[in-house]
Length: 213
Image: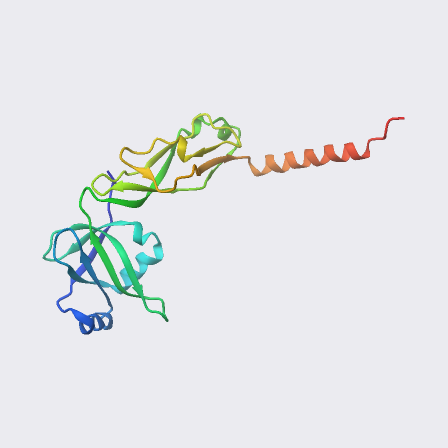
């Protein structure tokens, strides 16, 4: 289970319609709605500054939130739409969907790399190049894994680890069908440059060597 689901605090919006929404924006709020879960829709307001900061951080539409509204039970939600001003590109309305524990959703799960000391390539000075620090998985809302563990044991310089070689948490699957790379062991810069120079020297020798009589 994920260690910590971020809280998203909101206020219940007392009025509905365009007039209430315009007033909310004048008050520095972004109007929104929470729907689904066999409950009535709940109109809400979210402080503009907080919402804007979360949007800039990225992954907003694929992040599971714990919605907290005074007078209502906390509920897990995921964003389904963010409407923006056509000129300023600022959020003007946001829709959230309540989730049941059995709901399947796409979320980015962080990757943890283990056993670096058991990777010969790293011991020889290789560098772990992380291609995907997070992997998007199809998960169940009630059983969200905290991380995906990638074992680096046995990897040499030039080797890579792909999604097919990773034991994904039970009940999850990758959203991408192809066998994509998660990380690779790259040669250190100095070694790579030295190898290139040696290859260049050998090429020169071959060019300058006298022809046989």
